[in-house]
Amino acid sequence: MYKVNTKAKEIVLKQFSSFEFIAEVANYNNTPFPATARLVENSTILIIDYKEFENKFLYHKSVAPYIFKSMAKKVVNLEKIIATNLTMDATQRVAKFIYKNEKCLNCIKHHQIADNLNITSVTFSRILKKFKDENIISNHDNKFIIKNKDLLKKQFS
Image (tube, rainbow, N blue to C red; front, side, top):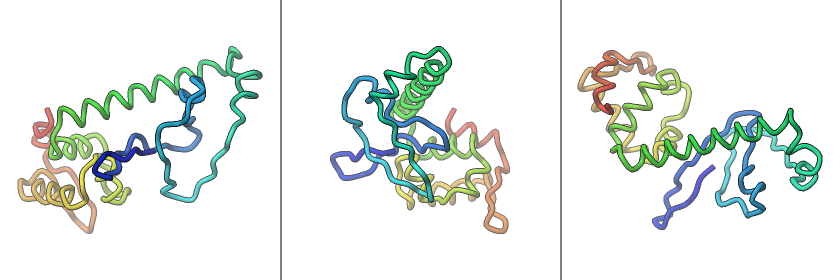
């Protein structure tokens, strides 16, 4: 899910996983959904008639908690995006991502990680090289590993 800024740069808001609600706040407020989506892998999307869903399920005691938890997760995610992009530079964002998602560094394409961090692929590559040069991470058989978690954490703490 992304928005496009005035410079035509895509700003990733969230990458969804299986069985997640999308646009529940917009539906609840009866407003158009203010973002664009692109599938990054073969997917199936279930479109729900919101009015019928609202009438039959929304306020049901076994369904409502899931909707509210989903909305709360989205609020927390947006707060993280805002805080990260306003308070951290690119190096800090990459360091924090690697620190919290070491395995993802080897299973997600680097351009997707860069997009999620709102930086260019070139900037992402330069930061990885810098971390390799500083002996913070290493690259063996095209797999990145953290060599020094403390130094990595200092990059964003």
